[in-house]
Amino acid sequence: MTNKSGVRVLVGTRKGAFILTSDEKRHQWDVSGPHFGGWEIYHVKGSPADPNRLYASQSSGWFGQLIQRSDDGGKTWAPVDNKFLYDGVPGTHQWYDGTPHPWEFKRVWHLEPSLTDPDTVYAGIEDAAIFRSADGGKSWGELSGLRGHGSGPGWAPGAGGMCLHTIILDPSDPARIFIAISAAGAFRTDDGGQTWKPINRGLNSLHIPDPTAEVGHCVHHIAMHPSRPGVLFMQKHWDVMRSDDAGDQWHEISGNLPTDFGFVLDIHAHEPETIYVVPIKSDSEHYPPEGKLRVYRSRTGGNEWEALTKGLPQSDCYVNVLRDAMAVDSLDSCGVYFGTTGGQIYASADAGDNWAPIVRDLPAVLSVEVQTLA
Amino acid sequence: MIRVIIPGHLRTLAHVESEVELEVAGEVTQRSILNALEARYPMLSGTIRDHVTQQRRPFLRFFACSEDLSHEPPDAPLPEAVASGAEPFLIIGAIAGG
Image (tube, rainbow over all chains, first blue to last red; front, side):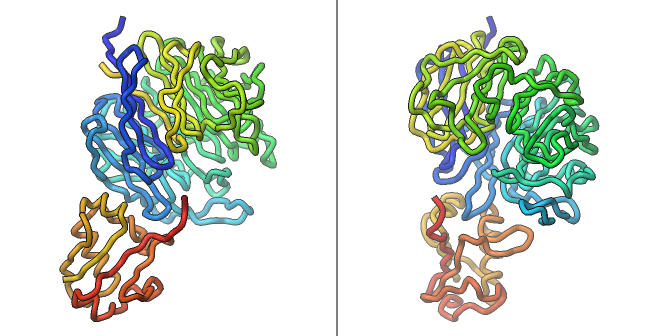
């Protein structure tokens, strides 16, 4: 048995952040919030090196972007620096109509704290770029080698904007980082962010002129199990994909899923071949097929999927589950959590066999992260 | 003393109760007021005008003396009633969004 005592679920919504806490049984929950009520909270995430250090992306159409930091597990917060200035001349990327469009900062989609240093945190932003702070968010600098990759002028926004939404830090190699952009694709650096290369070989996207192009793929989310950093799982716009060589080559593992469109994907904390997705009907019908909210689990690393339905609505359910809105805890019996655009947070304390809502009526959920507390 | 009224969400962010009183050096303009406001409340930087372009955020407006001054040049003198503190400079959030 591990020496762990509970979980803290960090929820970002359209109108504020919420913090849900429970002991290891995960039956009774304390709900705190809204924090930053009225603001869009795209993401809240805690430092693996110091669970009391949290970072939150707070934004609004009126007032722009703020970054908030907590040093006490979310009890109190203070704003840190919110200047995300592109390095050098920003240049242009491709607009929806194919014309060049200047790179413009819009918001921070994702915050990824360092695995080892609470003061180091990465930010994935729209228009797509990755920034890093090494002073707890007091200042930000762009890792501009990514945007400077020769393909940058050809990147184009997806329907949700041209966002860098996924950042994965390799626990076995501090110089290796994976990122994903809608709709440019996945990229990897092996030198701490100075240079990047596209890792999209094997992706097949029928909505772009060359379906197997080096860039242009609408990658929705990528997940990696820390014990196997070379194995990546991807939910693409359509298709669930897997790579066994750190993204150099991908192959499809959609198998018997009822639809292979979706946004979220995550991995069991203790079983690196057990993965979860939430199939969504289509790119224009952002709700579960047949009005049945089903998590699909594969225990074989893909291709063979089982529907998990106990405790989830199996009729008249038309919510979506967005790309950063699923997470797992690392208690002995792995907990799985996801949030919906209908404001529900569903939790399973038994790896997905049984589900129950923690809360039902939050604002639309944008992100869910989980901290397993000692 | 210049009186400035900021939107509710920014009052929460800056931990101020109602209107803000500022000393503004030199001519009283939109720019000099915003410079003084951001100097006193650094957490407001970037929330009213863009960090880089210094452009007013599209969903905010500047009112004073029952006039919309949003489209006046940022260095244009504001009405004497604002400069004297008789009237506040209002930063208004648009009735927009959801």
